[in-house]
Amino acid sequence: MKKTMLVIILIILNIQFTSCDFYMDGFYEDLDSDEQLDFVVDDVVDEGPVKGGQINLFSTPPDTLNPILTKNAYIVDYSEFVFESLVDLDKKQKPTPLLAENWEVSEDGLMWTFYLRDDVRWHDNIPFTADDVEFTFSVILDDDVDSHYKNNLENVESYYAEDFKTFKVKLYKPDSFTPERMSFPIIPKHYYYEEDILTTDKNFSPIGTGPYVFSEYKKNDHILLENNEKWWMGIEKGEDGEDLPYISQVNIKIFEKNSSVGDAFQSNQVDVVHMNRNAWIRYNGRMDISLKRYPSNEFEFIAFNLSNDILEEAKIRKAISYTVDRAKIINDIMLGEAVASEFPVIPDTWMYDSNVISNEVNVKKARELILESGWEENDDGFFSKTIGWRDTPLELELLVNDDNDTRLKVAEEIKNQLKNAGIIIEINRVKWDELNKRIENGNFDMVFIGCNITPVADLSFLYSSEEIEDGLNIAGYSREAVDSYLELILKESDYSRKKAFFINLRNVINQDVPYLGLYFYNDAALYNRRIRGNLNPSIWTKYEDYSKWYIPF
Image (cartoon, rainbow, N blue to C red; front, top):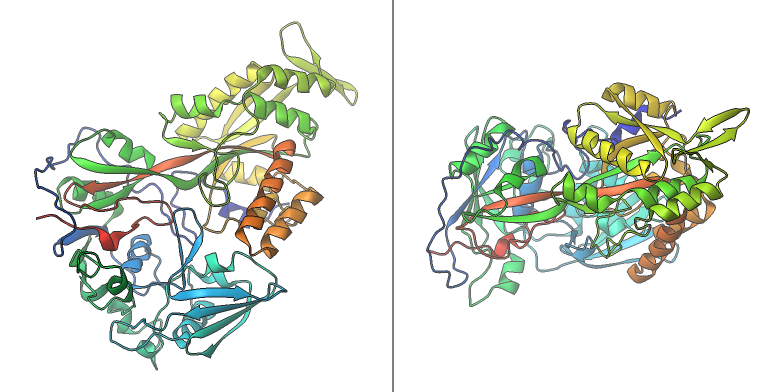
């Protein structure tokens, strides 16, 4: 029996899902496809970066501007303009130094030491120290605080500031992804001294260490940020004698509801929006905007029930894998706006630098595997086999939630493709509650579901045998070699060796096929053409290089 915590990973795409990375889904879908943007292609001569100007962004009413406490996904994203973390994630999903210059781990993998920069100051000119990191940890881990970063620190046994520039973290068990988990904002200890962190008015006038300084908050109207002329990184990286950031002001306009974002963008009230696949695809090819695609963190897959009499045979699962044509599904149904992937790891990241599918489409090979498994081919091209005392056709049920049109279309395509291999699929469209209940009870053959992956590339949640009874391994997959590789990855801090372990892990899983990985959906960022610079978003760095954006005059 699976516990109800299983719902955490199963994502029905028309329900808003929030997790520790707070990437929201479904709030751009109300855009009218007949509407046109008011923008025109400008004729401003771009002579390179210049200082000045204001960029306008979108938000719903904030609950707080404290990045540790907020539940507003927009505020979480915008907090990086004001606050910084010990560690940042680059486009390859690899941790890079930010407030921490470097770090090291003890031989047993339990004690992590982070060495902090000594040239960073808070916006009120007080030096940043390890005491601020210790304070941030204490706020996140406070039992009275409901922070979405609490999961990042659930493996932390103890922590302390050894001195002003050295911070120590002791873990309960080794976790080589600890640097990735340190990508949450750091807040100032001195600023909240003798304040109730949950109720203080200072939560609406924050100070950080980042490239923009809080200037003004007008309820239900806007949040105004001014560039930080003394930003430590801007002084280091300024070009042509100009310190970063280039844009002088960030004006975050507040709208009553998510559905206003389309109108705000089209009426030129906001300059940048991030859209899901249902909204942005209609703007593809437009000359009056800059549109940048990137893979989202929404991974779609089919889970096999390995206790099923038919699917317990690995060759049958592999035959299915050889038959399903992901490229055809993506091109015909998603119009090319998805990225094929066998695993819940975004392709073209440091650990998974290829999206080549291991089990390429080969229907002939699929039928051979079915025959090798003892199934007999009938005159109609399908298969049957005596299981127990009865003659059993090679027929399986595929559960799909009935209010997800895309999944239903993909399921029909998969059903048609599997006919070519002699496999009969019955699609059962069910309500979300029923689908979840049947998964919890193990009452399914195959189920079409999805998950929002986090920045931490640990695959234990889906493949570890420890996740079978009370966790998220709904296939019931158990393989000693897989458990060993997952453990080695968690203990190995060298990224080259960790990648090698992943490759070995991937090879074993590809032989067993406990899940049929399909694809990641694409998302996109849309920019007003007046915004220039390196517009290169990803799911982990939506505002990549925003300090170098500029507005030519």
